[in-house]
Image 1 (cartoon, rainbow, N blue to C red):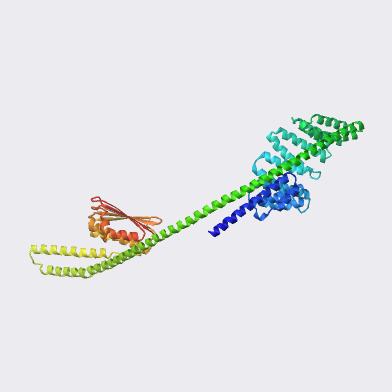
Image 2: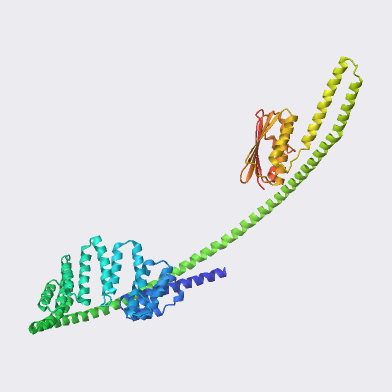
Length: 584
């Protein structure tokens, strides 16, 4: 009981500690989402990783890597991403593993080491999305890879992956996504290739597919940038003005500040100082407005953070209260379970004692039964020996005397050849009686001394025995065997032979039958024997009242070797005895 309580205490302590670590992980993730990377790293440093589960540990390393990655510390993020990938792989979080493969590609590409290769991460990332059979997610994967290749040195790879994405977009008939993809082609040509005319073509083509003003505004702004790069400043200014007319109110201040700055610089390049000065002033006006707005936003953010911190403290106290409440409930449940286990253990011991007593009783009964069967075997063995002795005595002694008597009688018949006819008839009758008596004694001796010949096997021995008995009795015995080609253990064959001999003897002695049919059928694990006769039958219930040496003895012998006996009989209806004897 003490050990159980100790275990309960340790379990509760572990649960509380686990909840605490989970709480720190949640705060660290919230700080990262709020771009407070150092605070997130500080919270993660307070976590004891030995108390984390595998999913929690994977999340821990991924958060650490994400913080370093956003701080542009890719060399620190790389080994942490590898650890997170390994742990997520062990828990079969394949989608998360794919995300980490994309981030490993970005990190390795940024590190730029000759010893690190990003191809394997791209391949694993794409293999996952190809296996998901989701075209929309696959095209997003192609776009993410293309964006990461959007550099002057790798612009061809960027084009290749954008084209793969465009192929899926066209199949899906997504017009807006197709326009975005054409705009991306234009940006790549405008920023990283000398083919500005191609950039202008893609920007113009994308506008035919765009429907929203904000999308068109971006396209015109990109067009202006292309014209500016090839020195066509008037066309650039016209495109900027078109972009200005399409600006939505929700983006007005931020976008106009950026757009007017571009227009002022373009007017300056076009050698139009008056217009350049006008747009520089507009840029400054929007800058002042944005600064004021940023100050208001900063004050609002401070107030919001205070309210959030206050709310978090309240939530933390509530969570701690819930943790202690939950721990108390767990302790109570564990105590109830412990009490139930103790009660169950006592009941199990009691049941075990009852079973042990029953087992001992069964063993005693088995010993008594074995002793009874051993006595029966000894008695049967004695009967067997006595039977053989009687048979030998009949054959050797009485048989010899009858043979001598017959010889003397023949001599007497020869010497009295001149006797009257009546005396001759008397001699013939007496001689016939002597022959019949001698033959019956001889047959009885052979019958009593019949035994299994091990060289022949069970079936031939039974058939020989049946032939002998059939000759000496006014009945016919048929032996039918099925699948009995395989020899049995010698002891089993002897036992079956004696049982059949006893059954046939019972029929001869009591049934007054004219026909006996014996069926022997071999199965995989047992022998089936059926003995049928057309005799006068009997009531099987008398076997319970009479435990003599007849069928009752046979039943005990069969049960002794693990077999079963079934008797079907009724007065005047013959008898059928079915034996199922297991193979040794």
